[in-house]
Length: 132
Image (cartoon, rainbow, N blue to C red; front, side, top):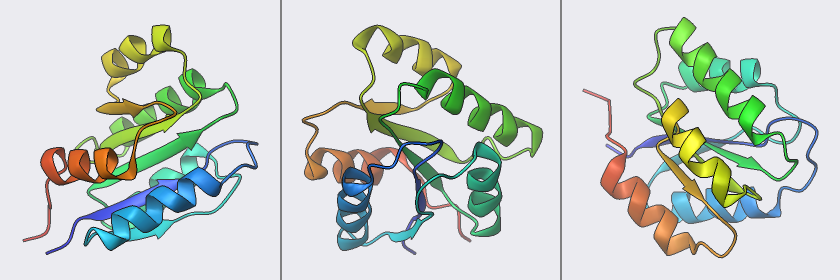
């Protein structure tokens, strides 16, 4: 069974080219991808991931609000007893913030320059297909 991955753009950031490129690469690598579109709240993203029985959520954050958005999303997953959904992401995220995000529960952070092959290989290796 293919992995189900929600790719989302949280917050007010309106730049979605990178998210669309990653979503297409993940799809082309054999995954089922649900792209939520722009301006999603963490609540909407978690609701989509649960409704779609997602194995992972990939967030694209360029707005500088990554600490708040990732932490809120992880807290909501915890509240919904859905921490089995792997959370990863990328965007303009300072190197100093990456260990803090990982400590909070983000499985992987991709910085600018990460290739689609790097991302799809990581997903293939570290995201489990939860379907029976």
